[in-house]
Image (tube, rainbow, N blue to C red):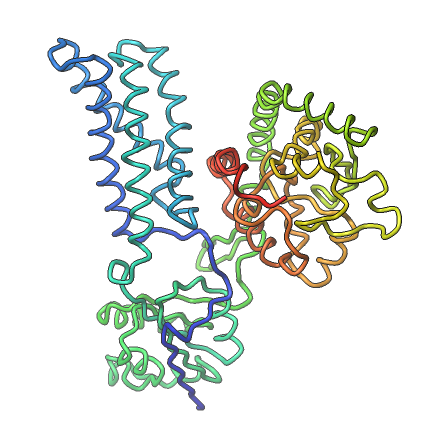
Length: 479
């Protein structure tokens, strides 16, 4: 039986997938939970001090005994429900601060409602507001610093992962795994794993010394042993016991079961194990209803807030280059259906008269003087709020492309159509992490961000993206 062993140090590893949301280890969950509790207690105490003006108030004791416990418990519950103890969506310290602040703002609303309905459980809503301000500073800063610490090698330590299977299977698994930059991998290729274990006599080989690939993985000191094929069921329990004694975590990664636009779960029916695919959460009727309601509420609020800006933009476009003020362009929406996206016209009226559809660039010579200003501050995108109310778009989602470019990308990017499972957005996960105008060669990177959004969607993620967009729209995008 041919066996080939390749050790790949961290510096030689070239991951295909980067900047994906990362789950927390148990150690980091404990660290974050302990830190949040302590800082919430401090923030609540400081809020009481400022809110009551002095510590001698007879209401202070009640606040510390009731409101502080309730405040900390509610925040931990909110953070847990939003998934802040499961994984991080932040790709930088700045992102971590944005998303923590977004979670704190989201969590404040139900607390204010609760304290208004049941005023007896809260001694002061003013103290809550002050506590929120201190929480933003303390908890937001601590999580940003912890994000940086997770990037330091001595904190997170090296991972040593061994992958076993056929040459094609090992390559497929290695490409699909999201390994950190400091991970070391040992690749062991065998023609048939089942044949290597078929003649094992457990009564004479209790430590599985005769399994060559297992011995190599054990001597190399791997933390995780990933097999690209399943082991015979009658041997699996014993292999698990031997691996546990060596502190090796065993896992299976069948190459055909890489994650796409569906979730996978294991169930049993009798003695049969079933691999059950399910729709992604973003595609379920409940999620679509919740997202639609949020879109309508936020779009109405945004239209009320930005109405004066939109009126001034319309006047500026008219005075600069005449009619039409709005520009309607066909884009591809949910389910691949076309719709007309609305924008303030930022280019000449004859911009595509000669060359047809052209991919917009950063220094596009077709822009008008006012158009350049509108695009610089993303004001030209504001009429898309009407697209949101009409149901063509969402506030957050993959940016819609023109049909001619969709046809081009779907021929080179196999998963491109998956981004059409949800409504396109005015802003999105890719929009806050990439420039507004990128070359067509960056379509694969943009698709990667869009798929990450689709696979990890939650209402909290939408609010976090909206919050980051509002904070960075002056500086983040190129015109």
